[in-house]
Length: 358
Image (tube, rainbow, N blue to C red):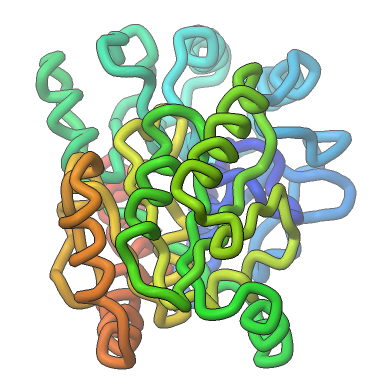
């Protein structure tokens, strides 16, 4: 059986969550020894994934939002067909991509599965963006949203590959930032950055906060100014370290005491932020907003949740998951729930339902 994974470029540096998820599936299928030929869409540099067939579709890795040239290359590949038994799409639902997929399906029909990697803004209908034979979602919150529109979907929680890190790299992070919590998210309203500052103000020194957020969006400078002003208001200048986009996230995550992400708006973000799952793999617990989809997995030991607007409760949640036991619980949760092999096994069941079996 041959399956084509339809994604953004499958190549390093793996900044995009949808291609990361597809990569995790490919790695999981390889580890299982599943008799599935996985074809991936990549650049001349290749995917670097064991056991897959690289198809050079893209000229370059590109950015987070693919341009028209990239999209045309994908459309031509789907319209031509190269013998794959089915197609597995990984991207956020949007009407234009759905239209192109429907046209390509009409030209070269294949069974199809679409993993909806993120949700559009609240209030925006999903039905116009659906095209596949089967819809796969990553959280109960997403499944309920589709149900509200009368659309059947199938829940398969995401998985992630552990990040690379080193003891020396982690030591450098601790030397630079002290004993710190990590906020790796957006600065925009609803992203949780301002709420994270309020929590830090309630936590005792010497705990610090590292903010890792890549510059993006037209309102980034305004959001950054709001963050900096709030740092001043709370007199946290000596306890907050602001970083932009970095390429050594593995060390930064692994050296953190916990990850704090009280985001309530995950528009265009994966429902379970992959960086939080990567943290669990490294033994780093997480605290999220109770309004967020990932609150569904809160166990009070490795993942804790509290209302985003309640800094006192969020602070108590942080204190509850600080410590060695929380780190052990985080690793255990990753091993029992978020391994690539588990993800691959679940996805194989959906391939079989579509009539495509090894």
